[in-house]
Length: 162
Image 1 (cartoon, rainbow, N blue to C red):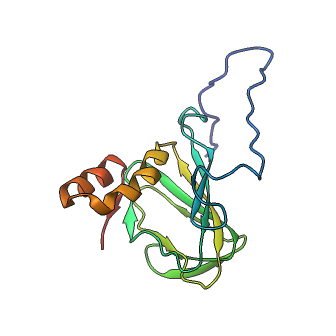
Image 2 (image 1 turned 90 degrees about the vertical axis):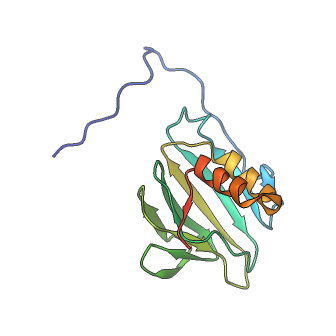
């Protein structure tokens, strides 16, 4: 079976200048560089809903989310540096630089940094979803009621199983 290209989005004839360059020196959008931080590399807004790409910096022993799944988005992990424990739905794996995990919609997964060293990874969500609001809202959940917390996770397509 031959896969076809997606529906045409650009209808012009000459191309246009619309690329966005983000230097590595750009400060994180959330958190503090070198600690727990998230860099919004390509948001669902900038990609017109095609995908969201984020660089995540995790400090030593920073933990991570419990096992969960998404109904509308897939999530992929690419380890840039350090060791990130990835749960693929069946087992935990110590993923290192260059390792990759793709989790389709409905796939159980989790991640955390249990090591004594910092780690860094790319997160890719497809199709794009407003994950920035999710990342930014996590800090406010400490004061939320159980009902508010459940509504927040439901709004952000995150279904926890443990």
